[in-house]
Amino acid sequence: LGKGEQITEGSDIAIIATGLMVNEARLATEQLAAEGIHARVINIHTIKPLDEELIVAAAKETGKVVTVEEHSVIGGLGSAVCDALAEKCPVPVKKIGVQDVFGESGPAAALLAKYKLDGEGVYEQVKEFCK
Image 1 (cartoon, helix red, strand yellow):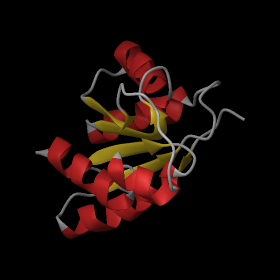
Image 2: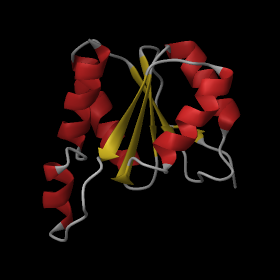
Image 3: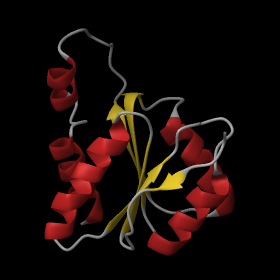
Image 4: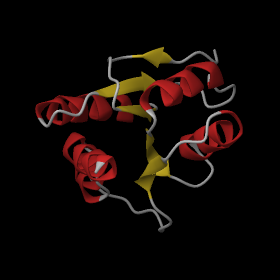
């Protein structure tokens, strides 16, 4: 409880994900590597307590952080990571998730693709953030 896990090595950017999005982030790192972007994926399976030590270390080592979650970016993993980093290691952060819109129902794979939360969508957003 309260301990994250580093899934992949990477020195260019840290992708901090939770739940289903950990695998999508891992898939995105394969495409990013082909572009010369070496992304570290961290699985944060508990937001409270948050593994601030792991997150801060990753931010210090990479200089950029992306959070990936399969729900609203407001008040979730991205917000918790931003709060921790604002105090201990301010770096650029991009929150990938459902932006401030009303939820909808549908096939899970289609919704992930629509909100760019599948591996391809995460790849595109991280690549753009790295520019």
